Length: 166
Image: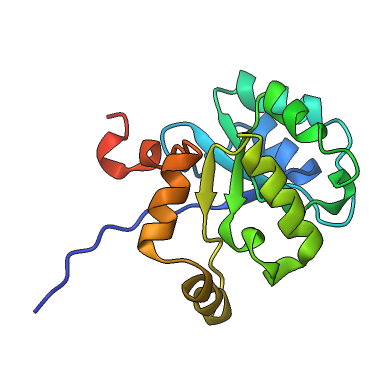
């Protein structure tokens, strides 16, 4: 008995000088859907020239999705900065576990704030190991996730393979 599964490769690209070089060299980058590209920042150091990265990505035809912005602690004292990230062209992607105490109460507070402001475009599991899966199963059910996606107009359905441009 065979199971027919279709897999797609993806990656979060760290926005740094190496990525900037890959972009300048027009390397073939993995995208999430069409020209949407998943990017992230360092957790420990605030990114300089964020506007340049956003601009260069968009000029190259990409639509950047910023992964787990609630986990960049250097923005926690300036919650309006998340609105700025949207203004300069980043879609924001919530890590679902950030809505729980998994990453700490401060990350949970910021994730809830961004969600209630309606700034998230997508939500994901960011599943890396079985502890993530266990925590997700503890805090969420299919029904609670469906309600979350509907209430906050999360656009994950845009990433379905069936809706991908030909």
